Image (cartoon, rainbow, N blue to C red):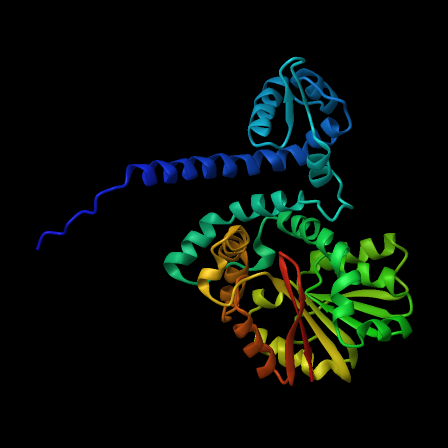
Amino acid sequence: MQVQTQQLNEDKMMAFLGKVVDDFGASLSTVLAYMGHKLGLYEALAASAGMTSGELATATGTTERYVREWLVNQAAGGYVAYDAATGRFSMPPEQAEALTNEESPFYVGGGFYVIKAMMQAQSRIANAFENGGGMLWGEHDPDLFVGTEKFFRPGYTAHLVNEWLPAMTGVVEKMQAGAKVADVGCGHGASTIIMAKQFPNSRFVGYDNHAPSIEVARSKAAAEGLSDRVAFEVATANDYPADGYDLICFFDCLHDMGDPHGAARHAAGSLAPDGTCMIVEPMAGNTVEENFNSVGRTFSGASTLCCTANSLALGGPALGAVASEDALREVVTSGGFGSFRRATETPFNRVFEARL
C-alpha cells in the first residue's frame, strides 16, 4: 500500500525553520553568556558608560578578537546595546540588573552555570536513553551546584519570607517565637540561611546527601555569623534525625529523589504533632499540554538531563520537574499526611503545605 505524503505548507515550514535558527543561536549564546560571567565581561561593561571591544578586552584582560565576536552575539540577542555612532557597546539598566546584580530578585546569571553543566552530561544521558539507568546529582559538573544556588536564591530571597512562609498555617508565628526547622535537600544552604536571618529565635538544620555542598553551606553560614543556630549535616531525605520539627522544608528537590514516598513518610514521622511541611516545586501543569510554554520547556529540559536522571539512577519513580500536582499529592498523602494544598505560587514555583 502506498503511503500518501502530506503536502507541506511553505509558510509553516519557513516559520518553523526560523524557530530552529533562533534555537541554534540561543543555544550557542548560553555558552557565551556563561563565559561572560566567568570572564567578568558583563560586570565590566555594566560598570562603564560604554566600551569598544578593545576597551572591554583591556579592562578584563582578554583577547580583543574574541571579545569583538562575543559582543556581536550579545547585541544580536539583546543582552547588550550598540551605538553605531560611537562604535561602543553598553548594558541597559534592566540587562545589567538581571545579569550582574546577584542580590536582585531579577538575577538570572546562575541559569547559565546550570545549562553549561547539564550540557556536559549529554553523553551519559544519551547512554541512559538507550540502556536505562541514570546519573546521580553528585556526578555532574561542579558548576551545576554553583549555578543551582545562584539561580534559585533570588527567588527565595524575593518570596520565601514575604510570601511563602506567611502562606503556611501558623508557621511565621512559631518561627518568630522560636521553632525547630529542617531544610531537606538544602544544597549550598541559601534557603536555610535566608530563613535563619529573618527568624533569630529559631534553630535550623540543613540536610543534603552531597557532602561537598554541605561544606559550602557551612562556610556560608559561618560567614553570615549564623553557626550558633544553623547547622548543616550530610544525610538523605530518609535518614536525618526525626527530631520533632515545627517545619520541614523541601525546596525544589522532592521530584529529584530516588524515594520520594519514603521521604514523605520520614518527614511525617519527623514533625511535631502540629508541624508543617512546606514543599516548593517547579511550576508545572496538571496535564501534559499545560507545560507547552517557555517555563515547561525549560523545566522539562532540565528534568531530562538532571532531575529524572538522578531519580532513575537511584531506582526511583522519577517524578521529574514537571510532576503534576496530582502526582505530588499522591506521594505526600501516601506518606501519612492528612492534608495537602497549594498554598501559593509564582510564575516559576508551586508552594504546597502538608500537615498531619
